[in-house]
Amino acid sequence: MLNLALEAGRTHTPEAVLFWFLAPLAVAAALGMLLVKKAVHSALLLAWVMISLAIIYIAQDALFLGIVQIVVYTGAVMMLFLFILMLVGVDSSDSLKETIKGQRPAIIFVSIGLIGLFLSLLGRATIGVPAVGLTNANTNGNVQGLASELFTKYVWAFEVVSALLITAALGAMVLAHSQKTKSKFQQRDLSIARFRGKSLATAAGLPSSGVFARHNAVDVPALLPDGSPSKLSISQTLDARGDMIESKIFELEAREVEED
Amino acid sequence: MDISNYLYLSIILFTIGAVGVVIRRNAIVVFMCVELMLNAANLAFVTFSRINGNLDGQVASFFTMVVAACAVGVCLAIIVTIYRSRRSASVDDASLLKR
Image (cartoon, rainbow over all chains, first blue to last red; front, top):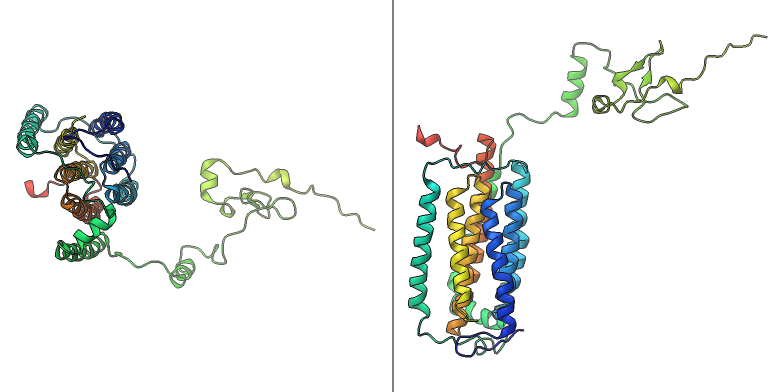
């Protein structure tokens, strides 16, 4: 465990180097999240921000939270985000055009105000407060310390949160569930449709592909009795892609049957 | 390096997330910006835990993570439901109550 002790609220050099390496990259990735067009790129940049935050947690003596950050956020949450992105359409790029007039200048103004507000709050919370460091709190190990807090002081919150998790899982299942408007075709329905269709020509099934004895691949159409290729015998997709092979070249040459 | 630099980083990330929630139109990206704000708050919790020398801040951060995981599950289900009925994940298109 990294036990970088504090002296009067200042960190040691390795931690400072780590911070000045990670923080600008995290801020750049977060800004990139706002500016890139595709949602997938936003998701990847957010994953980077989360990983750098996890490294920062571990550097700040919060070993358990750093690991949980990687497992829960970059593992589960980002996986879920990417899964939904694939479901909703990965190529649905967002137009960055302003839809409400004057929104951009207003939000920049408001965000500067927000930063000012937070800075004043931080000043109240940190100025004159000596930084203690977690060396004492983590004497038995970070995970043990957190566990003794969770299961004594915060045990009620812990139980409530478990109820919340179960409720959320149920809610997600109920919301994402959709009823089918018509039932799926069974074998019985398919065979009824085949015999009550327009013609009985395909009632016995479609012809199989290939020219017997010479070439049986799925892209070679079968030959009809008059020598013409049957398009019914190969997949429509292959035909549309132009991957159908001419079956004439595989035909046996007609030979005169010798009569004795 | 002063330890409150972590808090400044947290402020910057939170503000970027708040701006993103307002200016982006894709519901999924908006929600990712909400996650960024939650992460920034977690960073502040962890840093304050270190400044004050007790683990209460880390416990709060842990609970935030659990609640964020719940939020992700439910919100993504809502986005999928809206997408199914409107064929769009844009927050501008879900405007039925406007008329």
